[in-house]
Length: 115
Image (cartoon, rainbow, N blue to C red; front, side, top):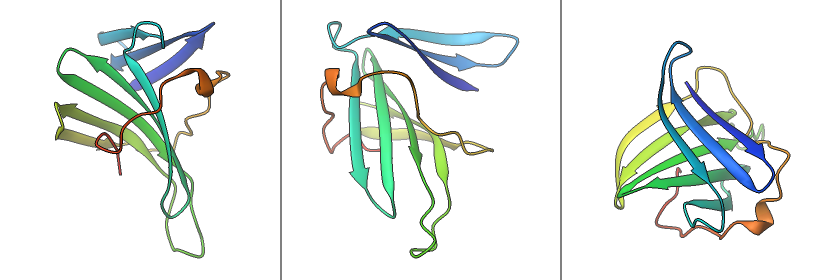
């Protein structure tokens, strides 16, 4: 299970099970450990990338596009450097939609895309 929450200008990424959180990253633009990216594929794709040392954890969501024949997708991509090492889709679609002003985050590079 992965979750992202927002409090003020800080985002918290957590990964683990309901019984045990395995990783927590507290991030902000000031700390330089979270980035935002928005792209258009079949529909709009939104992602947040949290960094922890050489690892990146990209949480993403993209809505369905009936004309293109695409379904809703959301998930987590894990990268070491610029190499993808894991890609986990959500069992149930979860929109990346937080009460947070993403404009205050640095725009992420195309090298770090979940798509």
